[in-house]
Length: 184
Length: 332
Image (tube, rainbow over all chains, first blue to last red; front, side, top):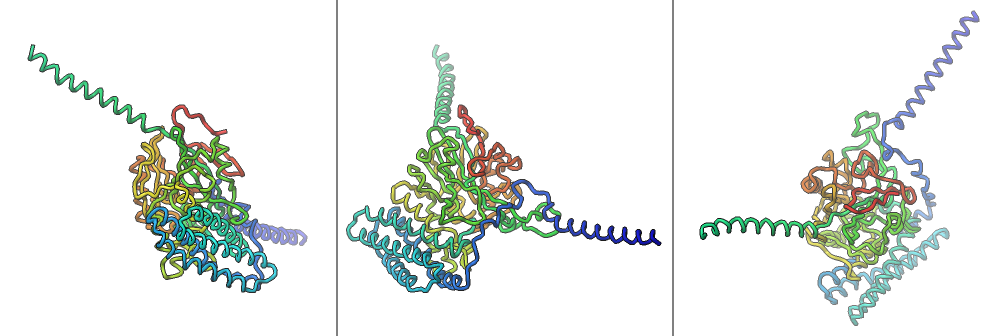
């Protein structure tokens, strides 16, 4: 009988070992696919994931997104107004017609974001976004002055303001919408 | 006597024509420099699902087929460095990783100016920049190349402007998340990038190209409209190993060109992408000299043109593609 018990024990151990082995193989299989060095999953991926937003922060991000989506478009539209003026028509009146609504948009956006209620953890982010809208509004105002007095230095000043505003808008995006630009 | 003179004249004429042809041929050869070329990995997008890059390579769990058994890939962002005589040309300029643009999930970024320095070049010596298209990850860092003249297609600019003014908000959207654009017409043209393009225009350092253009003898821009974006453009470069064609995202994948598979479909007409592949076959005589922007196999033996590679700044890789006669290797 002790021989039978040993046999039973050996059987249980073998079964457990087989199950463990099969499980290990199952788990290991996707990683064992032959891949080139360039096609392996990076151990660093996911390391720098930003912390999740709280419910209050999420509400603020959602409210701001409605402004942000149009602000990015308006910012690029302003660059294009300048490109068209320089490279195509040199028509100051046409430039003014394009910039006027953008100046109003950025002024209104500045007021709108300033009036939003941000959680304390995002107060700096809110200030940054308000600052970006103010810079864009200032840049638009400089461009409009150029259309009146023809002082081309104003375009350089406006461009510098636009660059700073674009960077600030990205800073806010890093906090609220870190995936807003995908690999293209 | 007269008969003899008549006999000599055709011979003299033929000899004269031959001599002139030799002279002009040599002059043309002298005018068309042989260029050297390197590839810089500006950064790497890590762990990208293969199917989102190449639809025909979508991962199928459990599949043993080589086209569907790779779940994800790391995509380099390649920048071409081309030296033709005293001219230093960049093809694409990557993007700039800063506190305001960390791009979680990307790795190995280093400033383009530093990467050029590692190759022994000065960013201020770059004379021309040809951008394959104006997406944020291909047309960044322009302001760090103060003396470079930018070449961009009018078609590219027109299409972005058209999209920006489209009434439907999804079609005119620039940024992806949350719930905005993915492959819509204005998607991916970040404000900072477009402001840098405008900066070049404002400083009188931009050439807005209409279709084909020769920017140096033998160095030609070819339009590849809608092969990735509306105004995509290729760059043909004469080298000692034959002509190279830099394709940016019209040629996102070397395997895609080799195996006739579409890659990186954004504002893309896949028919036009295949025609861009064909253009490279026609210009270079095959697919091996087509330079891809995001090929995962870049800097390895599996993409032979780029195999002469090394690891440079911050883990980013570089490759020496070809050297002109007399040009010294810059491989450490």
